[in-house]
Image (cartoon, rainbow, N blue to C red; front, side, top):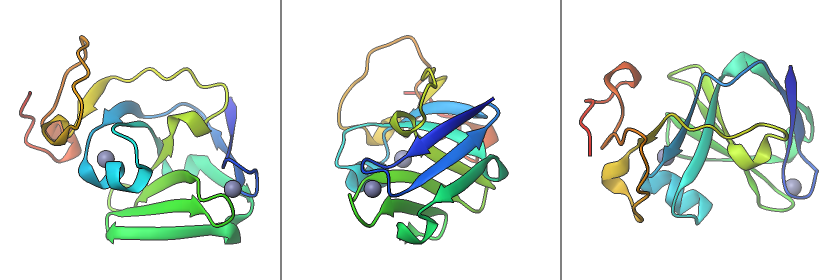
Length: 138
Ligand SMILES: [Zn+2]
Ligand SMILES: [Zn+2]
C-alpha cells in the first residue's frame, strides 16, 4: 500500500508507503503560524516510508526549531510535510496524502489551541508521555 503526495501545483511529488504510525490534530502555535490555519491535521510516518519522487530541489525548509524542518514548495508555497529528525518521523499534511482517510487518534498541544474542537478524542495539553510530553489532559 502506498499513497501519492504532492503540493498544490504538482512541482513536488512523492510516495508514502505503509500506514501512518499515528494521526493527530496539532494545535501548536508553530504549526498554526506556518500553515496560517487554526489546526493542523497531521499524519505521522517513519521517515523511511516517504520518498520524494519529483521536485526535491523545489522544496524550501523553514526551521523555527531544529526538531521541526518544515518543507514547502518554492513554486506554489504549499506546505507539504515536516521532518522531525529527533524522532525519525515525517509529518505529512493529511490533505496532501491522496486516498488516506484521516482518522485522528487525539489532539496534541490542545493547551495552545486557537479554536475548540469538541469531540470525543483525548485532548493532550502538550504531548502524551510516550511522545515526550507530560501527558496532561485538557
Ligand atoms: Zn507546488
Ligand atoms: Zn504542531
